[in-house]
Length: 625
Image 1 (cartoon, rainbow, N blue to C red):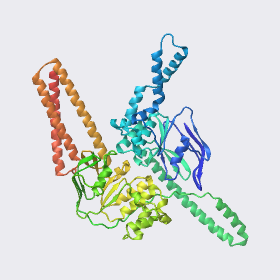
Image 2: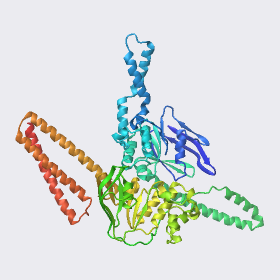
Image 3: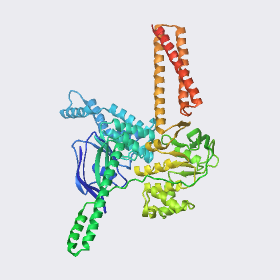
Image 4: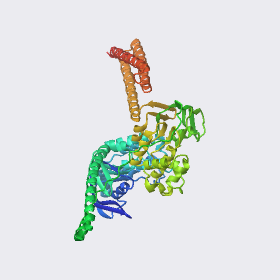
């Protein structure tokens, strides 16, 4: 469907693409992987037609529709969110109006021209249904996090992030044959990300996806396009399989590199010996030319496996943080209330919630940046905390070098330790002398994080620490935080990062905080099972009500109806007890005496539920026969 032939592109002295050849088919779901600067965004621009190779071509099959979403774009519109999304179908909306106008005029004396136009419009509508389009528009907007209330909000009043969601909604409504997504989830929260990738997984279209979240490259992609040193290679399999194959190939290349270096060494020794002999000098020159023409094997440097020694800190008390009945409102609008929680020493707590719920605000309340509007926040005995804020990058001094910036923040830390941390965070050699002013967003993020990690803190509060980081830098940060032995509370929208680090999850809601012990995927599983349980209970209640209504129609037996109602009340109470025990299991240690007592209760309630359900069915049968 899309064919790239001998594509080459260079910027200054950097070769971005060196005569690459690729073919993408309509059904291929492809993740794009490469370090920063390897040309991921540039390649998508070229395929979309908004860029071009120095040499080579891009060919797209006729009648195939390509959808492209860049990282950032400006949406100027005075329409409402819903109308702007629906404008994708503007052609058909106008045709609908024209069709209605013609139908009002049709009679026996209608002109041939009018009838021909009417026929042409009907032909257009054989592939279009306005009602279905409106339904799809609502579904996609809801999936991307828009509430019904926001449907009527003018686009021009939205933040940049919400405008990008409108752009994404319009793109998905276009029904392209193949999509080009350049970090489309940058402005999405976790629930919306999950919806988006499920949409991609089920879609009958292909795509090229640039993403820095390993989870989605694994779950949403069947192919990986690897970009490295000017080359592009399409691999069949998900990201984990790709990395495994790359490690295997790198090992083979490393072996070949070692053999070649030995061969070069032997030849250089021979050349030096021959140079010392007048009779063999010409032979030495010939061998030297041959050696110069030898194609050298290059090995991509491995991402360092880091080993960090954190500054010594005092051991905190077992209770690190207590939050009691905290609430906060902004301009009269409640963000959250009744927030109660305790952080224990050693916890790695992930704070999750949809965008706009107040995660960053809660962080600022906990650290004292925002005043308490209700409730209390208390840090435990000997707790020293350090904070990484979303806007931490703004506090960096642009005139400093990297090493100056860190040293000024932690002057008591030895330079060798600072250099060790910077090296682990991909600033090695002369890179430590780069000015802050020339660093990318990701590089500045890493400098800011090193400043935080080198503070003598036994409690870290990290708000979006993975912002601006590519996959390699995220892996470095993850390794560092996994080695940190203190306590942590953090916010992230990166699924893999959350799953790899969190030992418990706080879910912030407008009316409180839900505390789940376990990994992030344990939390998702529990949420999904609760939603399923809730739906089942609704269905059971609906079925019970329907059966009772039928029974009333057939037989007006007050005593049977009363018995059925009593049984239903008992069933509801038992189901509630079972639900409470399920939640309790998440907070108690498996195998403990408390766990065993809860398990015995659970079995008893399950038995009660079976007996009550059986009795309820018998009463229903007697009422309906």
